Image (cartoon, rainbow, N blue to C red; front, top):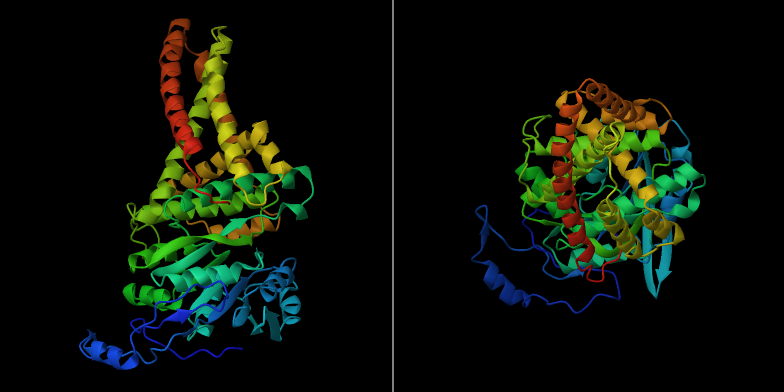
Length: 503
């Protein structure tokens, strides 16, 4: 195992080299005597800023894996890490609140591991830490891993159900060492669909693949600026994390007063002057949700946490940063979802109303929006690196994508309803229970939809024919305008250049 070089200040300068034959030539600093002369006139906080070690050296990486009931996946995660073309220098498996066999399975990998890649010898050591009952859950495990990793240059955060492509760590390190302005770098996430059977599971996995692909492509085309450094697989600069802690007076990088600790940290890294990026080539395979209950728990937590970041002073010391550049994409997602919800509910209500008085006349123009949506989904599917027939069928059939959009709109409504009600619900616990098959919150969006439709039908039946005609004459034009706006935005995304990026 490569020993950490000791604790360093965030202001210390150090040129880091990747352990990869793919690295290009590096612009080296002046000779030590010249450098000493230059630094003799520089000061940081009133102290001479002489670097303790100006000689370039290889970067060091500590990998931390927070685990909660991951007995089905932790072995695959560790195997994928130990098969990397660039092994992390140390791997810490940090188990919290677990009541399954995760500790026993992880401990079978404990100890020293070596691997030779193209003549380069890599050595790593796997450590397993069982925290037992931990009130801070994943955040507590991440912060524990941070303190174990002090003295290393980078922290690689990997979820307990995420496997990495064999060159993922090498590619992340290459990009991080090439640009020291990067404070955090995310891999491109997707799902391995080959492991799941059953119609519902395959449908939900296809939907999540398309959802993540759209999110990743949006970030890649925005200068590779990543809105969220997801905990699934991201490489963090220790200097950036320490800067966040100093700037925000924190004891540790991850805070427990946000339900999206990764989004919160991403904002803070950006505020500290570092960039947050998504890799163009490093890939990781995330564990998907394979039933509606678990998917609802996960997505409501994500949506609620994002909303919480918009609004000032809603939770803990979160000041809210609605205009933060990392939240622009989140605003776009919420506004887009509002348009999707309004247009679909509006169309259903107007269609039922028109049919009830025999006033509906089919116009082929209504086929344009779903056709554009299908073409957009198809183009995104073709941009997937590991696309298959199921991804293409999901896009061109249209119906699966539309059904998944209705499911996502249910998550959107549930999250906003919880936020506006100022509920103190623990969404971490709700997601954990949902993944265990507990809870029925996932059916509430359907109940609300039926109630809205039922209420609309009843209210419609109480109106006179003249009022009904007036409602239709006003409602259809409004829906036309909203649909035209949506279609224009879809066409813009359909014809934008992907610049060779694959998701």
